[in-house]
Length: 175
Image (tube, rainbow, N blue to C red; front, side, top):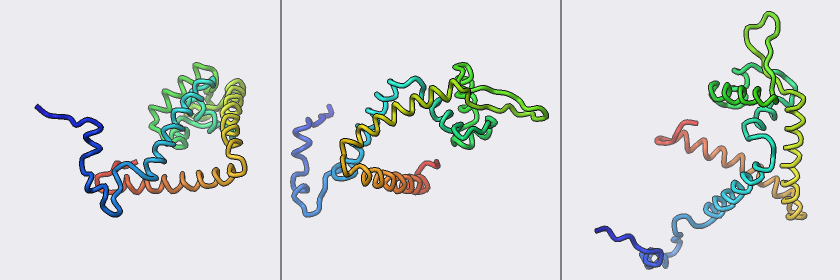
């Protein structure tokens, strides 16, 4: 029969290693602190998403259309970096909700998709609500808020590069 050590027993295992100079337990340090903070942010983001009208996919679609340009399904898929079947499903849902409309220009075979006025009004209200939560949280940082935003942007770029490099390593997933 296999014995699974209790949490207390696990803590006692390898105590001699814990005393070795420079030894750090797996999953401790800055990486773990970042992972914990990001998990907390993700949970909070999901709570915030429940208080807006549109879903994440609809917001992503409408954000793309803030430039006022209609697009084909292929262009939407390329812009969002999604499979065309995924975009087709999301666009069909948004068409049914009345936040996007589809039409064909004379002489063109491809359908064009654009945001409706109602869709953009709902989008703008949802974004204003979400940004309000971000601003309230930034206000709690006081004079550190601008520096936090700057560091978060820099961290996001660096993490993106690291994640893509990981995916490019042997055994990593292509992304």
